[in-house]
Image (cartoon, rainbow, N blue to C red; front, side, top):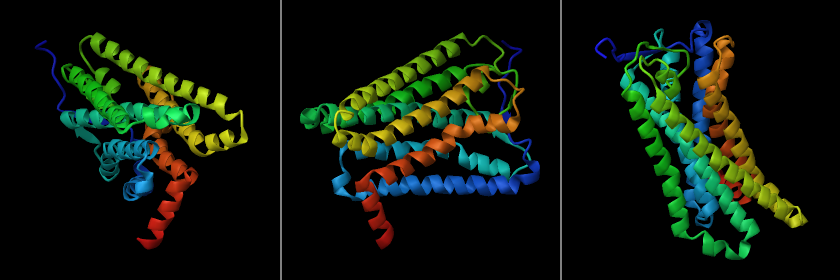
Length: 305
């Protein structure tokens, strides 16, 4: 063990092919981040200001937007600084913090989407019991687990990574991710592997529960035109958001563990950041466009702000 050491700095090589057009990428990245902040904050403020939106579905939506803002804050500021710098380096401690922020957000998005799916399932499949089931206590409990469990999982995962001595200091990505750091280790990483698979199984289980909820919802909605209209207005956006997030997160997990360096760097970067670009932008836009109460209230705020 005395021959091993932990790197003080981690070098990120994901931007090595954009040296000649950094200003363009900087402008695009800054615009994307400002757009993410504006659309998510608009939805959060709209829901907070309008008392008629203080319902479980909108409360979950507000938390989904807050989670997106939290997760992207761990990625975009550092990327913008790297686009202005010739040396793309991050201290090891900040690297671990970035891992924690980004992946706590990722692990938190699935239970929030699952809670939203369950809310819609109760509202459509068991409407007479809705207010009995979705009580304020139930909503608070679901949000507690949606935030605290992912934060605890991620904290334990980062601590397991922190204990590893490293034999390398280069990551071929735009940001620090847990598995890339683990692969730099000089010692066996069995515990990290087991923990990673447990988290993946836990997330897949939640996703399957969500998909089953929508399966039940579709079975109820196709029986009437009114039910089909309700599904299109309130449930289809949830389903699109869930599928989009699962695909984006799956790309990142599979590439981090099994990806090949033979793929073009640009393609690898796109696959690695998709879940940090598409869901934070798409979720509030989908809900803002499809939920009539939110759309009407957003328009009112924009007119009189």
